[in-house]
Length: 99
Figure 1: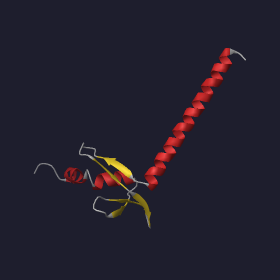
Figure 2: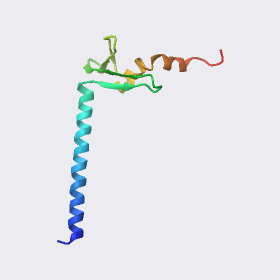
Figure 3: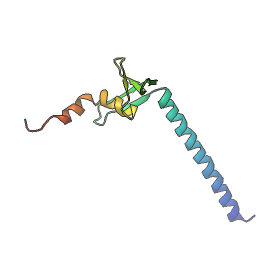
Figure 4: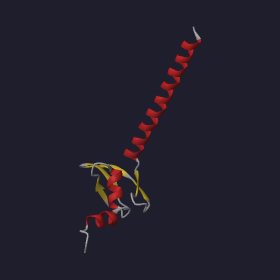
């Protein structure tokens, strides 16, 4: 075989191995999030919180620090963020300005 053909084969093999590793890592991360929990970071730099998730009667649920399980509104990570670290900041944004 020519050197250029060998280089192309080696490059293709390396790319295939890298893609497989990325795919497996993403798969294990989503499984960990689905079965183990999620971590949410404040959009305002107010901290981070990690909480378990579970399958509830109406879909996925996340547990708040108080121990209450609530339904995930789409993303459990976003639900956790909005209901914990960004709770008051989110409500502050909804107040009318100019008072």
